[in-house]
Image 1 (cartoon, rainbow, N blue to C red):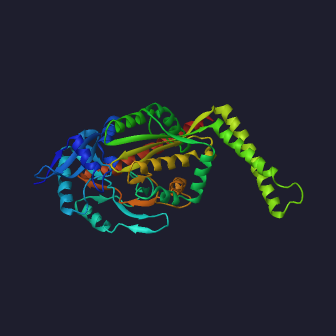
Image 2 (image 1 turned 45 degrees about the vertical axis):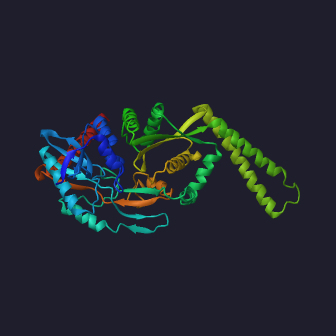
Image 3 (image 1 turned 120 degrees about the vertical axis):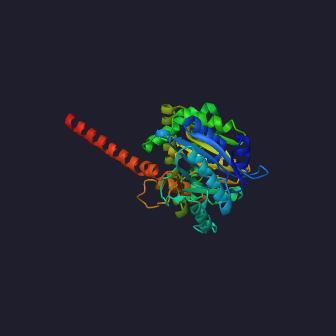
Length: 437
């Protein structure tokens, strides 16, 4: 007899992090506790156990409380189960539905970590041979598929780039685009460095996040959110949050440029003054161009030093580790000195870091499916693509409706009402501004 029970956090994490195919940080105890503290959600760590008290399926369920003592549940990247096993999936779903109904839930949302297909750096497509079976198994349990969205309409990204860390680091680097390799090389030539930060560096990280989000015209979280995330994930032995800081020491960079300038002058000095061959003339022209560019670079960095100081953090990324995987969860960059390509170097450093730790998958956590040139998010996609990971598409969101009337009100009428109110408010504001003129 299979039964549903609330699991102890340690037991739950042990099962989830070691699951062969479905371990994910969004199903971790750490994420559940963060959602409780910072998002006012109630986490439940549920497991389906057999007669021997062995876990055969599990899920983190996050309860969102609504008016009238109602709620809905969300299993981010859940369930943690073998979706090919239809009967166990049905039993688990039925048990979850019973649990949810007792809590007056309107619906249950899942978005499993199931890949529909992937495309490698060569453009070769690899379809999930079990996809149709899994899709039909979920559907047969009563879930309704919410469609194949193309951008960031869903709770979690439906597309991402993933790097297989089982490859040698040389092979991983070989899959980088030519531009990426060149930019990493330039960043290293300028003596930039990447260090691992601590809790005291969160304010700097937050500052770069606000700069990045301001460029995109939105602000997502306050500083305390990132502090709490860092503390929770590093306070649990099963997870980790690592902060990578891409920095520039302008004095070192100027010294490197001056050394390069000296080398250029040395090359020019050995060229004969008279009777230059055609190739020598071409070389002189190129060296002269390099000399002027380098001198301009030196002057530019001297100005930056006066304005911003000597040591500047230009890039800050937060990496989440759980089980045998890592995710680039947040990345912030300064508005200045993008030509140093510290962002590229920072990415490369945490790829190597994850590889050296023995992790198996490196997930860049989110891109788009609409690759039209006029999509404002295409730049994000193109940047992540340059690191040569597999372009993966996930199955998407599913809802199990437990209260059809309230589900219709919540998912259709409430958004419509909010849209109308927003439109009226905007109209009033426009009229107010017009009258002031």
